[in-house]
Length: 304
Image: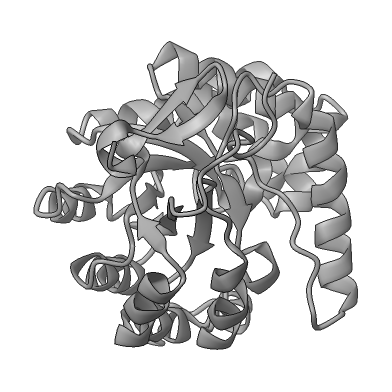
């Protein structure tokens, strides 16, 4: 069994490979527009779709004009309404709406909400994307809820069922600015990653961006990019968008996300310069292949 990333020895001249994956497509109009702006700039190479979004029809049609961006499902249990009636009925204590991540995690761990209900809801979310003619290449989840051990196995099973090759393996990135919430988040993610590591069927890209989630900056990237190693495959999580306080009313979301900062960071020409300087090649999930030795870029990306 392989751990995250490709552990095969590489030649020093080979680039590091980076997928820049924007979460939350179709979450809000302003978020989708910001993501597509970064796609047009050639920096965002993948995006996860919010499958229970009321905007899904329109936003999925926007993606049709961008065939070069890889699309996945951003599986959701923590925001808005479920797609399945049975799951909605199980949320009667929350008026049929998904609760926050700690409430839903507690309900699942205490078996107040069954794993079978989650499986059916996530299957409906995947089907909702397929019905919009989206070609799905990966799965991840809103607020990393798929990393809860009972749900990680469900996610892997659904990936096999639908022939989706890649599942995000979220890992902590201990913050430089210490706070109780950041320590709690990374402590929990560390335990989840260690637990799920034993059930990984194959390698996954090395995960980046947890420590700057919601506030990806040029300063962070200037420190991160020189550390990427030749031949390794990485996924950088990001959340670009445009600012629209008329559309987004939730104060907690506005406090957490600086969508405008992330969009500007990923649209800045300095990013492409930094990628070239550090011999980093942007790729998508379509460029990956799983071998006995681990995960690697396909031959045409390696240049052999």
